Image (cartoon, rainbow, N blue to C red; front, top):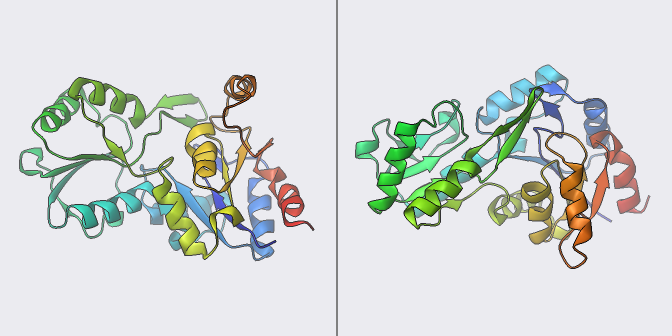
Length: 266
């Protein structure tokens, strides 16, 4: 059976940009087998080029073109949906090189579209109040992703999704998110791989954004017990016999080659 791989990065391959045990060896082994792959990430603190360089420093060999980031997907969505509009991007990190095809502005008073990237110190009371007022004034607001947290070596940090819920309740407006778990990224990745969704294995540490989101898009989901994984969240799903559940659960990406052997029937 032909298979393709779709990797999340943070919490699966690295944490705080340090390789997780066995990750370099597992990813390298799977690459040596010639299995088609992409890296689908909601990381918005770095551009695709910066992510590739950071992974290289950790021992991975990843080309920037193999990385499909929420920023890149959002830029393509905004460029096609709001062509020629001035866009104010609120994001923690330098990602301008991935926002090709979009006219950027640093002045929210001139913006015709707002894009919310990854949360951080730029998400101040003042800036979020400005976003709320723009929402109320009818300015389109797009989120790069709806992630609630990200994993660091000192614990979890809250992310954009926490703020989105508040903005949506305050404005009465639903904010479109482009990155995982939206099907947009999953479909784009499978198209690039040239495979059917059912032939692509998504490996992630985020139960909902990575794994169940992928399964909703007809991909095979693999949950790793690293990064933001929480055993109690998995147990909660087990108690709901009619709800979704990960197709596969492994301890870490180091166990992925063995699972791929089983899935491929080798």
